[in-house]
Length: 153
Image (cartoon, rainbow, N blue to C red; front, side):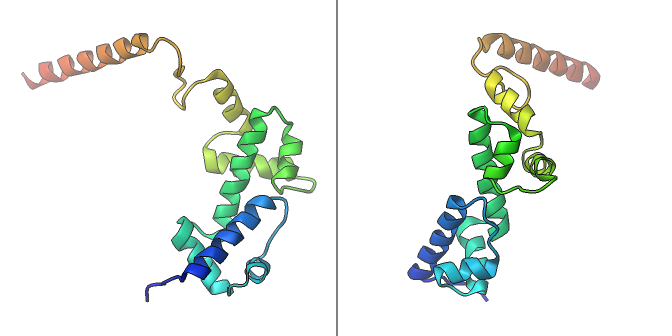
C-alpha cells in the first residue's frame, strides 16, 4: 500500500520539522511531536520518510549536526555546542562527538580545522593555484596509462 499524503498532512509534517529545528535541545517523542502538530503518529513517521527521505529521529540528528557545524565555525566550545544541540549530562561532549563522527566521518574539531584551512575532504587546498594540483594529477594519470600500455604489449 502506497502512502498518499494530503496537502494539510504535508503542512503538518513541515510544521513538525520546523518545530524540531527550532527546539534542537528538546527531546520530542513521536507521540508528543504528532500531538503538537495534530497528526497521528503513523502518518507522521511515514510522512516524514516520504517528504524528507529520512525518519523523524534521523532528520533531528541531521538538523542538530548542521546547527553544530554553524556553531563550530563561530568558534564556540564543544561543551556549549553539545548543550545547544541537545546533548546533556555527564557524557554530553563524548556523545556529541561520537554522533558527529558517525555522521560526518571525522570529529567536530577535525571538521572545523578542515573548514578553516579551506581544504576539501582529501586535504587539497580549495583556493590555491589549482594548476599545480592539475598538472600533478595529469602526470600521474599519464604515468599510469604508460605503465598499462607497456603491460598490454
